Every structure is written in C-alpha cells, then in structure tokens.
Length: 412
Ligand code: GLV
Ligand code: MN
Ligand code: MN
Image 1 (cartoon, helix red, strand yellow):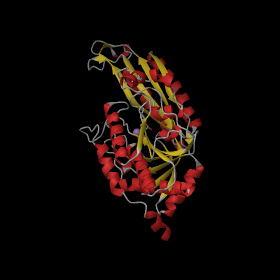
Image 2 (cartoon, rainbow, N blue to C red):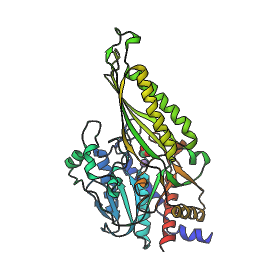
Image 3 (spheres, helix red, strand yellow):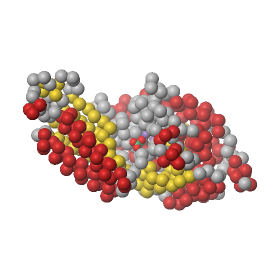
Image 4 (cartoon, rainbow, N blue to C red):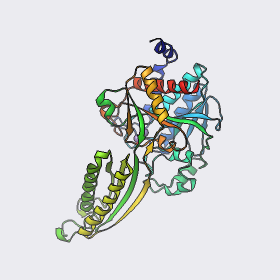
C-alpha cells in the first residue's frame, strides 16, 4: 500500500489527457461521428500541427523529419540514446477517434511526468505518418522509413486512389523525402486500443502484447466481359463481379478453416467497372488482407487462395492477375518488457493479461532493431475502424502509469 501511495504521487494530470484529446477529436469529423484523416492529407497535417503546438506549449522541443513524422523530446537531439514512445495520427476512412491518437498523447503524458518530476530517463515521443494502409495500400510507412524497412526509392511505387505517388505528394508538401535517422534506441513502447473484444469481454484493464500478427496483402484483378445486362443470356456471360463474389466467399471460408490458429482473411476493398445497373460487370479489383501470428497457417491460406482463384476463374472462363502488395512476418515482442510491464501492473494493482495483437502497429517496425513492447487498453465492445470506436481515458492513464513504472524500474 505504501509503495502504491508513493508512485501515485507523480501521477497527476489525468484531466489533461482529456484536454489534449479534445483538440484532436474534431479533425476530419464526418457526419457519422467518425473521422477521416488519411495519410498525408490536410487532416493528417492538422493532427501533427496540433501535436506540435501542444508539445511546444509544454516547453518541449519538436522536430519534424523529411517525411513528416513528428518527434518530441526535452531537447533536440536525434541521436541521443532514448526510449521512443508513440503511435500514429492518421485514420482509416470514417474511422474512430481513438486509434493511434491515444498512443501519442499517452507518450506525451509520460514525457510530461518525466519532466515535471525531473526523472532521469531519456524519452522521445513520436507521431508517425501513414500507419494505416487505406491511403497507399501499404501500412506503417512513416515508421518503416525511420527504421529503414521502407526505402526512399520505394515511395514512387506507393500510389493513392487517385494514382498520385507518395513521392510526388511529399514533394508537393515540401517534405524532403529523407526520414529521421534515429540513433540507437533503448527501446520502443506503444500504447494502443486493443481493436478487438478480448479485454472488453473479460473486463480486464490492460493487455500486455506478446506478438503482432503480420499481414500479407494482395490485389486481385479479374477481367470479365462488359456486356448488355438485358441482351446477354446468362450462359453467355463473363461476369467479373459474380466471379469475384465466389472468390470472396472462398477467402472467408479459408480464413474460417485457419481460425483455430488465429489467422484471419478479409476482402475489404472492391472496385468494379462500369458499376452500372444495366451492365454486366467487366472488371473487378479486390484488396485481400490475410493475417495471423503463425506463418505456416498464413502460408496455407495464401496457397489455397491461389488454387481457389485459378479454379473459380477457369470454371467461368475469365482471366485474372494476382499481385502481392505487401508481405511481412509475424512479430514477437520483447519478453523482458512483457514481464516488466506485468510487474508494473501488479504493483499498481491493475488487472492485465498477456495477448497477441491481431491488428498491425508501428511497433512491428521496431521489434528487430530494439526492445519493443506494447500495452493495450480495452475499446468498447471491441469496435474499431468504425465511427462507434470508444475507449476510456482513465484506462489510457493506467497504461501510461504502468509504462512509466516500467521505465523507472529499468532505468533508475
Ligand atoms: C491497422 O490499423 C491495421 O490495419 O492493422
Ligand atoms: Mn487503425
Ligand atoms: Mn492504430
């Protein structure tokens, strides 16, 4: 009890999280209550501007790198060995207001505690650009550039839905396309909403993440024949959309078969031309997302997926092209951080469990270069990437406390 009282003394400022959060929450608001802050849009720029303003008002030094990532510390010094804590400020279209933002303001609160209490732990807070794959078909671009996983030469290959390349967008925004070259890190820690319903259903305050599921993503183009929907008899059609529908259901089936290994398979994107009521669809493009924490299971889905697409299109006499747009391996997070964060939650009397992350995060980019850990807080009914996403700032505050306790334990 004595220990709890002592550590509680430095943890004030719960209200300030709400004040910061409110400044971000109106950016990119939709009528649905959700937000659209696509990567490298003016809304994402605005999110970074707010982060910069809040940080400067607190007396912190702010640096923006050549691709628009924002770093905040006690002073400017990129290469000083430090812990990096943060997340992202972009969103999916019509997404929730908590995804990413909580990890950034959580990091800021920890830095504020460190400064206010004169604690000698080197920490920088970071807000990465383009964590979501919805804008350029590729996730974690900002953090990938910083860690060297994404190469600057690749930027011309990442295109948005209008066909504009990320390289051209960066140029038009005055960025240099050179990312921040970090010095060696003490570690990377990210706080995030769980985006699933495990913590919510079990009524547990915190999740300590042990591994992160890796996505393999594909673009499937199906070439049918655009025909008159009234004049073309059913047996004479090459309907790209009906073919795509069979493929979509097959992908769902493959995901279900492998769900015992926590693998998931989703078709979340569909583009059809000409998309007209009285025309047999001539062309369809699908975006396919397969994820899991067991490579063998993911690979089985990928191989079955290839067989099924061939079988379905052969049967219907259509051509197709399948392109892998990204592929990463499941990521294991650092055991000593997992154990340390658990100890901190026990010390602060907060309930927690160890769990894998089904969603991708910037933390994936760091796991093989520095000790990396993540803390999840529950989100209401596990809803995320949805305007109804909801989470408690009290739980965020708890997550900040266990991270700060862990840092104190290992650093002082
Ligand atoms: C990030 O939100 C993801 O798609 O996992
Ligand atoms: Mn997200
Ligand atoms: Mn996120």
